Image 1 (cartoon, helix red, strand yellow):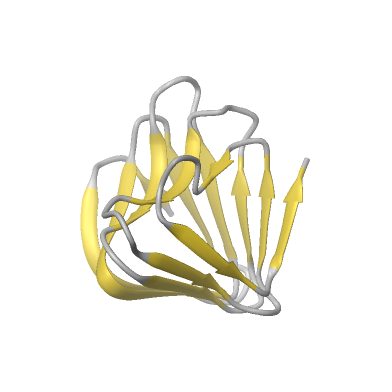
Image 2 (cartoon, rainbow, N blue to C red; image 1 turned 120 degrees about the vertical axis):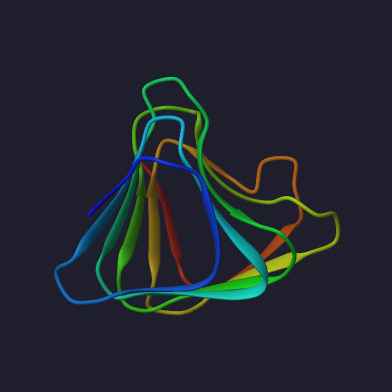
Length: 116
């Protein structure tokens, strides 16, 4: 499934072999306390525009899936309100060449982050 517009939601579940593609210049926003349950694939595909997963407050990324930040620094996972924490749970992978929490909030990471 392709996401081509900016949205804000309170939860997301990606299952099995499903893939959610965030296309260039797209923001997937989550309200405070939101949960992303990813057992599939989420891919951020910036070609220069800001392409992001943004938590407005605390949030959780869980599951056995992968979030891939494509080969562009404008692919980002961040927390937009100061003081919030994103919990990245065991078994989940974030990988790629983008930015994770650059200059924003904090992350409680017990998952895997691979800078490739």
